[in-house]
Length: 149
Image (tube, rainbow, N blue to C red; front, side, top):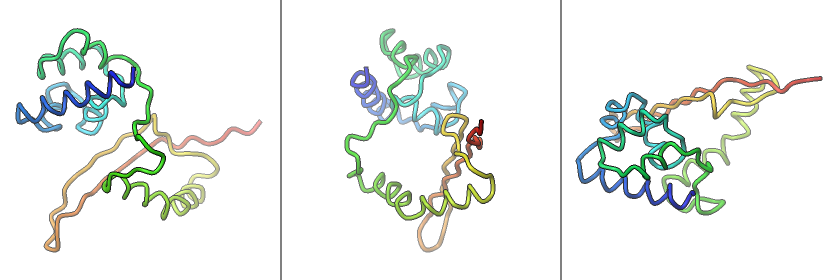
């Protein structure tokens, strides 16, 4: 199934480019955030039926492709343990450098637990800067404490 979702994701990228659409435009048309919409179109989220139908109508997808957008994915799409794409590698590098810092600071503030990637949202924006525009990524996830029995 992942191969089918991956292939559909590549097709959606071509259709998106061909129609001159942005993720923000597609997201607005289906009623979800741009980050979630992109993740769903690339096969990492399952779309509700209504969102899949709206996406299919906007992009001209088949009934089988619409169903594939609704299917629950096998999440995690990187082809190698250490990413080789330079942009994705920088996120890996952030985890390698700051992961223990984030862990320590979250535990200090919240206690023993994790930040959810399920009850989670993320936004990305461009910040103009005279030395070169900056990328701002904001992530929020529900804190889930470990249970003690």
